[in-house]
Amino acid sequence: MHQRLNLMSPEIRANPYPAYAELRRTAPVAQVDPGGLWAVSRYEDVLHVFKNPKLYSSEGLRLTADPPWFGRSNPISDSLIFMDDPKVHGRMRGLVNRALGPSALSRLEPSIRATAEELTTRVLDRRDVDFVADFALPLPASVIGALLGLDPALHSRFKQWSDDIVALSATQPGDTALLEQCRRTVAEMEQYLGQVLEHRRQTPGDDMVSDLLRSRVDGEALTTKELMGFLFLLLVAGLETTVHLLGHSARILAEHPAVLKQLRGDRSLIPQFIEEVLRFEPPVQGTVRLCTQDVTLAGVSLPRGSPLLVLQGSALRDEHYCADADRFSLERKGPQNLAFGHGMHFCLGAALARVEARVALEALLARCGTVSLRPEPIEWNFAMTVRGMRNLPLEVLPA
Image 1 (cartoon, rainbow, N blue to C red):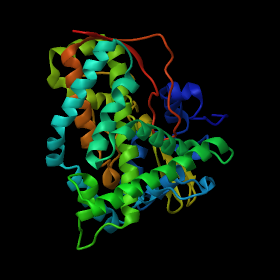
Image 2 (cartoon, rainbow, N blue to C red):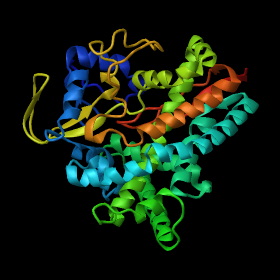
Image 3 (cartoon, rainbow, N blue to C red):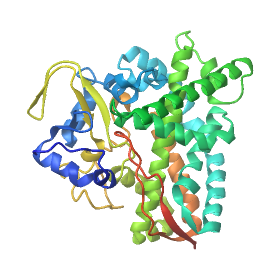
């Protein structure tokens, strides 16, 4: 490959999979733009990196959340996805697991269902919709808002905040306007979430923020810095992944009417459908790791400190891992799904995202007869690690 691939070019954003296939075929570990990270594209190499956090540190993620040219610190980089120390990571993870465990999720499910029913009614009343604005965004925004006890009037701000935070992953030093916008967003989030923490200290409620303030692990409370990092992470990760999972699900249903018909006939297939969406169009396309020593990966020598872009989106389409990988198939009995990562950094919100997607699709499929794409163009988001649609023009007709 003579020319370095630019993963942020509009053509690759719209469909990165041919570029990934070319990388797997000709240069499974290769430098890409922007920024010259080393893209790791084959399934076996991606899994190897995930399984060896001592060699490939998640400190690399700081480059995406807090690049040296950002000019201020981003609290999200104090959250547990940036921690490899098993003691610290385990302490934080234990707390969060309690907050997002099976019993917490089953308590949440009725309110998720009520919101999904309400949004389905709205979509069917309008028929011509932007599925992102009318369904895929308001559902997780209301869930995260309810979990944290945040002001519902702010739900529309959540998306702008999370868009700006993930856009940092693709910035370069010269992107002055975007960097300024991101700095404003971080300051706004810090101010608002700081007020939420202060208010809950004074007046605890029945919400995750109050629970986290009360929690003790080995007798220790979380520090304000740890709490702020976690709230940033939950807002951004909890929104981005689910918005894009719902958006990809709806687009795939519009493009595969036979699958829509099959799911409407047997809604017990919905969890299987979600797993194949996660493989076929994973919201998290890649994550960043840092080599902690000189390593050789797929025959390429990488010096200590080299940043890797670990491409889950490519690994999940690897022909050696998955036969006929570019075809969407409900019948697929797939090997291990890396859409939410692997190992100690497996996404804590994975179960919540799956519950939200399942409940949303149950509500939609019970009442929607046909879903078709309208001719308006689709815009893709701007981020190195997360990929999804900013808008999805659909016509949705009742059953």
